[in-house]
Length: 276
Image (tube, rainbow, N blue to C red; front, side, top):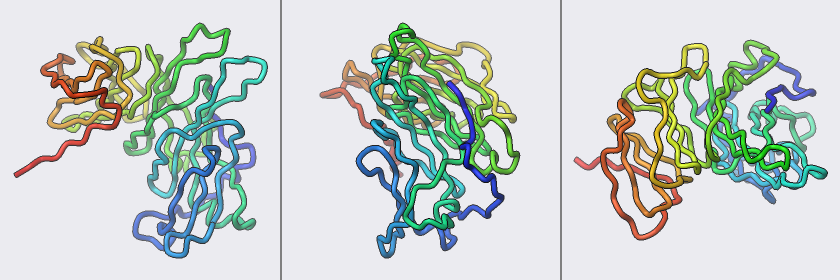
């Protein structure tokens, strides 16, 4: 993988629009699977778009935070001779709003390039950092290895520090991380990610954005692969598995505590409603 800022990124210290400010009334959606277009939410006037990612699909959510939005691309990389890199990108709404070429493509603030790409790999925002997982490498020379979890500077933090590399930390995973990264609702510095390789991993996020080992168990085998976004409630992580169950794991001990059978593979995310 390689994290970098866009070669044409001016690194300007614009005031990023936040929720409630006038520039926050915009909407974004993928067009043709290869780029994101941004519209005024009131008039549906095209404001601008992200850079075209030729022959790639955008299969992650487009996630917004503090005036920046993030997404990853995925595409076939099994043929080494025609392979082009998949990227996870950060874009500034301010850059798109103030692009002098209205309706034209805007360059990203930063990108993280990764063989294998990003598929259902939704981001988690925590303070100055954004975390997301990736697929394994599938080029012929990789032997199917190389899935990762990344901790990167947020767009705001990156612009403030003018750093050379957005990637703070990256750790290997077994199996594609095709689901959202989540944090413990009891201890928000505890980060979790599950994979199609039937693994659940636990990390501690340091104040500087490093992914560190925790005390006790740091990974466990789960009963089947998972691709839907998990949910966390009162220190328990719930995830849908391909063996047609929803399984709960106590985060502090990384022990499986229960499993409920469901009619089919719950590939969609878990949603928890607390009734009173």
